[in-house]
Image 1 (cartoon, rainbow, N blue to C red):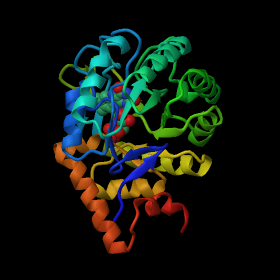
Image 2 (image 1 turned 30 degrees about the vertical axis):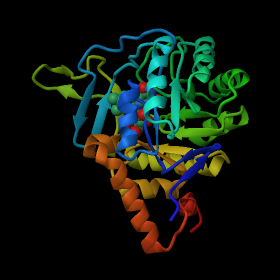
Image 3 (image 1 turned 180 degrees about the vertical axis):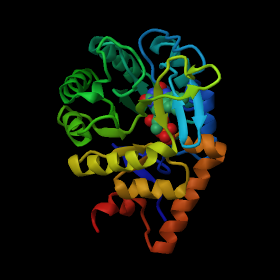
Length: 306
Ligand SMILES: Cc1cc2nc3c(=O)[nH]c(=O)nc-3n(C[C@H](O)[C@H](O)[C@H](O)COP(=O)(O)O)c2cc1C
């Protein structure tokens, strides 16, 4: 039974990859996910400079999932190199994806250029965080032309594989993915959080998040994320890191059948802690055995064939 995935020429021993922003600030915490069964990991998104992010409260849970407005806090690309070195030392065999963003396209290109020099296997371009105020006014992935321009600019300077992370908050996600593919993206990560959404503190009589609004993830996002992956699979030939509301093995199998080759794991960590990786791969293996599949690639896009 083969659960390993060759993704853009990189070998993942199983399809689970920690999603950006989850346990991704230090190399040691990412390597700990590998120790617990994750196939690969994605680092927290980095900009050029250190960013404080939004004040607390920034992360809330509700019965359907999570709402967050962390605001992409981080130490800045130049201060983060030692975390990737540490990861490589602790987890030399498992792929790591470096996530990058910029206040504008020039900054994005510069951050990507620096990230390429780090010991990462591929880059993820975060074009889709819904709750940061950057100079572009809205996430790049909300506009086909901006997506094309930004992908082209990074492609010019980066040789390692790049995955463009897209937003569910668009009416035309297939078109956005096509723009990224046409400008040289090797993969699509789908999706980032949806919204923005809001929760109200009824005693304080005001929005609970300090930023008032935040991106919604988890179970509430799952059916939207599956539809996005399905639409993208139809629209492009490049592979997809399917992310959004995967809590258990069944969700993971649905995402594979929608068209994901790798599975971005976030919510499942919140729901089950680090045992979620083995839980998900065990369930996929069991399903494959019961249904007579021998290679995980046979599941990818299966929902399109019936
Ligand atoms: C607290 C938090 C922080 C996040 N930070 C990032 C980030 O830095 N970069 C990014 O591309 N996505 C970030 N995300 C989005 C996740 O990577 C993922 O795309 C999204 O949450 C959907 O997956 P999930 O439902 O499994 O959480 C963050 C999500 C959460 C909940």
